[in-house]
Length: 172
Image (cartoon, rainbow, N blue to C red; front, side, top):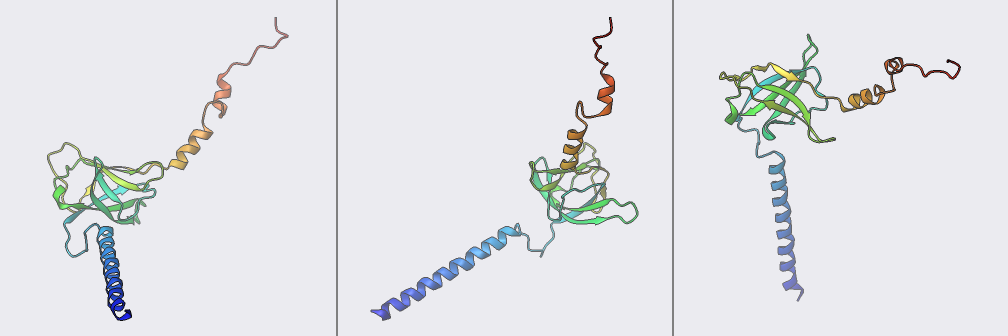
């Protein structure tokens, strides 16, 4: 009886291992977005920002909410001290107008930062390696909250000076 159970158990263990390896392969493919680095179907554009906030490499580049590329590299310009983001854009979108603007946005309150491109209306297209001229930096949420909290009505000296003094009871 144990001789018939041995091959079945070995087959079940082997099938389980094959299933585990197949699921790891699927996970590896899904995590690389089907890009293994063998071919490059992208072209690069650069964008200069005064503040990149929480933007990281491999962050999405989107147009109208649709991902069309990734942030390939982030560097600091040693002369102007601006951050330069290199964007790897899918070659299908090679007709990006030259007056396209780039902004760094955040998906939700605590979501990931991404680069949002707003295509312009110019007939001339950006060429690979060119810089996007119109950019707006990331918004620092904590800085905005701090400004709102400490500069609201009644919180500053200007608001106190604008209100006239209350009349005293001694004046006729």
